[in-house]
Image (cartoon, rainbow, N blue to C red):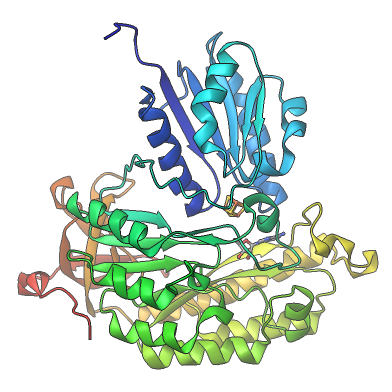
Amino acid sequence: MSNAPRPTVYIETYGCQMNVADSELMYGTLAAQGYDAVESPDGADVILVNTCAIRDHAEQRVIGRLGELRRHMKADTIVGVTGCMAQRLGPRLLEKARHVSLVVGPDGYRALPQLLDGARNGERGIFTTFDLEEHYEDVTPRRTDPVKAWIPVQRGCDYRCTYCIVPHTRGPERSRKLDDVVREVRQVVETGTTEIVLLGQTVNSYNDGTHDFADLLRAVGAVDGVRRLRYTSPHPNDFTPRVIAAHAEVGAVCEHMHLPMQSGSTRVLKRMLRRYTREEFLACVATLRTVMPSLVLTTDIIVGFPGETDEDFEETVSAVVEAGFSDAFTFKFSPREGTPATRLPAEDTVPDDVAGERLQRLIQVVRAQSREQNLALLGTRTEVLIERLARDGELLMGRTRDWKTVLVPGDASLVNTYHMVELTGTTGSTFTGAFVKDERASRQPLPMAG
Ligand code: 5AD
Ligand code: SF4
């Protein structure tokens, strides 16, 4: 064995959970080649920035950060840009940032070790080819969260929402084999993790050629030790009766769902090519609530999409109320180069100040609704899984099955344990809680199928 020090790699992750999972895969790929992960860019031999391209703002942040990272580089540090922005900009990134020597899209992480070898010899490399077979099946991800495992089950997207860059950055949809997903779930459960989050761009359209999403939910829910099962993000049109039925059968499926609505106006939805009307979306919500009466729903909404009128926006506001969302990620429309929405007539552009006002109003409506719902929960008891120390270091942060954040007193030894907690206070969005003295409830049987 050589005594040469092992090279170190630092990865900084932006964007969605799929990127978080991809960073774990990149660390895994590089660990297999002898790299050690480090938690800071200072002095790292390799710095990778795993990027998001969903809105211009996300890209500007990365550009700013790439400039800053220069200060952390040693003379021989290799800097690479990976993920959606790398895929989107390709060679343009190398022109923009002279200190970047690698640009690798979401299907190219297998090539990282070779590209890094090349970079050490002064080469600048780009890998942005899509690979419809790529699921990184043979890579063991380096997981850092002991509580929750984020498991990609599908990559890419076949919808063509007119605002969205993802089909360009992540390529066509493909699903992992059900057996491979189940094998990975068994592995993470063996390490003590009991919460599984299945990831995909439109995760409920999962289909591996033999099995659909209903089969997947049943198979993952049946793995011994899986106590909480979540998935993100579904598309309303992919809730087939089979998939809906599986929710009633699989006890581990949690009572929270993040279901992107984007707009509450049928006219705008049509221009977004979302493929559902306001009524169809609300009907989907009603069906889901029938199978899961205590379902908590959160969503994504875009305001200021080209052509959105005041009336359209009011439809969005009223749909937030009708659907009963408990929270929402709200965004101002950001035109993405090459997407169909950029070809809508210029006169349809919503002025920035109008979009800004709509965003503020929507945020207020969502906050008020969330506050009202949360106040009504004070005094109730619920199961909390402790995730980590809270930011102030004095309290613990945990989550309910329906994705509420609860702060409770305690120390780090309680991380990754389940407890019954009484909700004692709320800021409107998060809760404080107290352990219920009679902890028999925390030894309650695992949720059963059926
Ligand atoms: N502008 C603003 N928001 C967008 N999203 C996707 N594309 C855009 C865009 N061009 C939002 C959608 C999506 C979330 C991840 O980001 O709401 O659900
Ligand atoms: Fe994730 Fe979409 Fe951002 Fe890519 S563009 S990192 S898929 S949110």
